[in-house]
Image 1 (tube, rainbow, N blue to C red):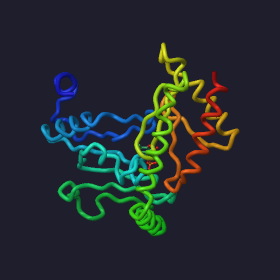
Image 2 (cartoon, helix red, strand yellow; image 1 turned 135 degrees about the horizontal axis):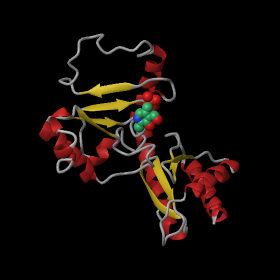
Image 3 (cartoon, rainbow, N blue to C red; image 1 turned 90 degrees about the vertical axis):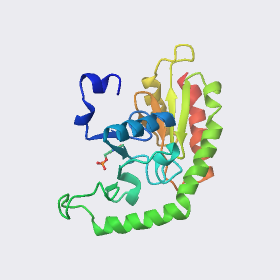
Image 4 (tube, rainbow, N blue to C red; image 1 turned 120 degrees about the vertical axis):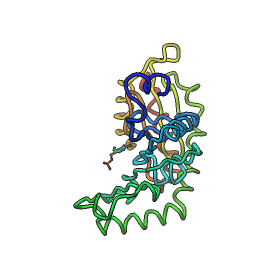
Length: 236
Ligand SMILES: Cc1ncc(COP(=O)(O)O)c(C=O)c1O
């Protein structure tokens, strides 16, 4: 950004904010190194740019911490949250430091914003997260990642297993020597798993995402992993 982007097509003083997902969702459940987020924070501070973390997918306990940014030790100026915040009731929130929220009341409104039923669902969700579900996400997620860490060695078509908490991506490749992405194997795996009672969804071109409800038990996690292990040989 500093060596090329700011010097050629986008002067830093014209940039209001950098928006980034701490852990990428639709892009393929990608976990960046901490240095990536540290550098974005450094560049934002140096040029007076706001740093916005989009925690719509990764927030509210999904990654085993309340917010995924906590894994990287980096604090954003603004955080966006939705999806898990109200356990399925429609709600989203923008949270920022007080000195960024300088607009007067009513300046940033939404017709259906702040629906009282959704707010009640969110308050209970936050209570459950704080009481036990963030911890459950960290515990079951670590258990799953530990069991699946052998899969890249065990299965020719598994290129990578990565994630934090219950935000786990399994990347499918053609084979270990070419490491070529295998989107068609990923789609077939979705179907085979579905036929065996397991709902999984793709993310990015060739990744299967595991994004279970945070109430998942160890037994349910094992069912998911057993089912995937039954499917892999059928893809060869
Ligand atoms: C990371 C991320 N940000 C934002 C959105 C949009 O969220 P909403 O539907 O609450 O506008 C999505 C939706 O998939 C998302 O995955």
